[in-house]
Length: 452
Image (tube, rainbow, N blue to C red; front, side):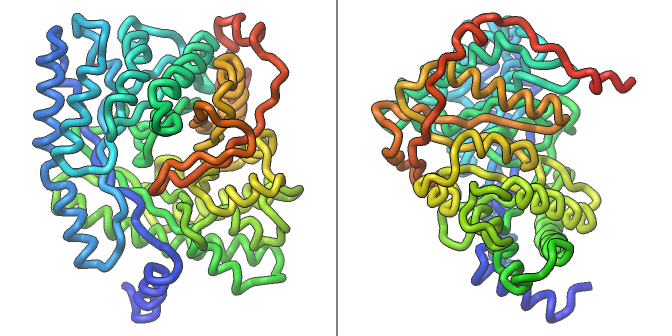
């Protein structure tokens, strides 16, 4: 039972500490939409999404008004389109991308994810067609998000896919050059992608998921930051316990919203994803949480240890608050979406190399990072390979969402607007990786993957 103190604490967190439900995401299976005629397939996809999601935004707004809890985004994720379109007699899957965009627009959601392919062990012909269609689709649509899984701990790293995605990212940036390469902000390259992630741009509805499901993403960096201000100078035992207790309260709120949405929509509840997802707003920063632990600036020595504590404590607190915590739960470190990270980059304290080290212990990876527009496809592929290796060896999800900003150089800034914020263009290592990337093939799975 909630008491008056719990209610007042929650109200204060919402009013003054940026606590919100970051997203209610409706996952929809599209397996019954397959057809050899791509236009018929696209039509069936649009009709099914509009039918299943017609009340999503309405119900989200009702819950927001009744509970007084901000629900920032209402989103949809679908079965990876490479699987649905496999029987289509067409090389251009952008037709389906437009159908997804039209359905998302009609339903009034913020984004739709699932223009995706899973190629960690190799390509089907459909996978190749989907990947080739990514740049055009992301350039011609506003709401469609794409992801490609290139590695798993069980399969190793598909280096042919890694090299291909380096080229696709460059092409996507060039096709959206008039928007600072914005298309790349809607494209994520994964290792160990999860099937129930509610956050964009990497959300898709996995093969093991039900026909439809409600997944909720909760975020509250500002709440954790404020809680740590009350324990200045205390030991790390106290810091960890404070984060755990705060994460518990945040997750409980997410559970309430998830249950309400599930009941009103008549759709099963899946998971609560407790990820500390920052925004450009002051006081809503993961970097500032790390600095509150005693770091002069995010990126200095000690940053990785502080992030490890934060990520672990968030998960421990969240798992006690809900029977179904999933997705990516932990702490995100997207540079452009975190005002503290932006400050750290501009001050020179935070580099891509340090961010890579931090991804060993956080929830995702190199996220929303702008690099010079002349960065080569091979260098981008090598960055993906490094991040994939971290995920594969550590049996965790990692990802790369990097934007080679056309016409921009180190020190410039790229404006994306909204939750995507603005990104200072970061230096990359100019020593070539071309021969490494050109080898192709697969980097084998690590020995600890053999657990059967």
